[in-house]
Image 1 (cartoon, rainbow, N blue to C red):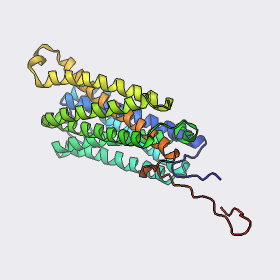
Image 2 (image 1 turned 180 degrees about the vertical axis):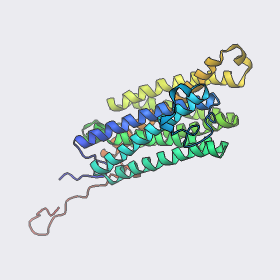
Image 3 (image 1 turned 135 degrees about the horizontal axis):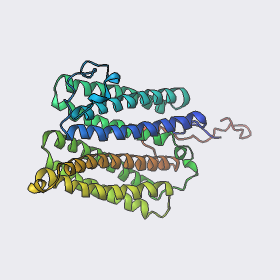
Length: 330
């Protein structure tokens, strides 16, 4: 007898649309984070002094001809943020109406609440001139992106058909390594946000860069050398390895730009490009390691390994039999 759990997605057209919406919202959020980085690195955070209006205009009616200089970056950030907000509303509705899993529906609501809080934080950063809010705003953006990636994975065909996939060897250890690597990547991004906005915490950022590199190196090696080759794990593992190598190279470039005298020989545009690319590459690392970790968690769960709380996979009890004739009652 097949028992549906909160970890098993509801099949059908609604599930496919929810998955597409999750992927689209995550992609839009990636663009939003990139533009937000440009706002920070160009010093344009306060180019528009009012909120939720833009120089007294309705935000959506502000003339394009006036979007020059820092106003272009800041106002574009607001418009893209509004787009992400509307997509998140659609995603939450799609999950609530079309997905039978309580956990996934609640995560959709968490995403909705998160994007509302994120928008308010961004506005208060401008109105109150509170610099510490910028750090929290940046960290919440990365957490929100991680949640969207998670929803994309949990509404995917892979999640639904994981029972048909080969099981990874040493699933419990692999899961622990994956979750550890994901946590370290997020903490590294937090230290990066502190360094970006305050100029302090370089030592912690460098230390966590080494920890992240080591943990992801172990994770990628174990996935690629496992006795059981799982294509759904190998592909993101390879991408993750390449992203980390690229991110380390970009990090060296940003270090030379910000903390050495070599920036005098670099064009300002190069410094801006290095910082913006470094930030978005870090977000891509976080999204990829999250995807890989959740796939490992899912495969471990269907393989009979005790699952993490958010998979909500329940153990199926053996059918009960009656005393007379061994009749199955379940």
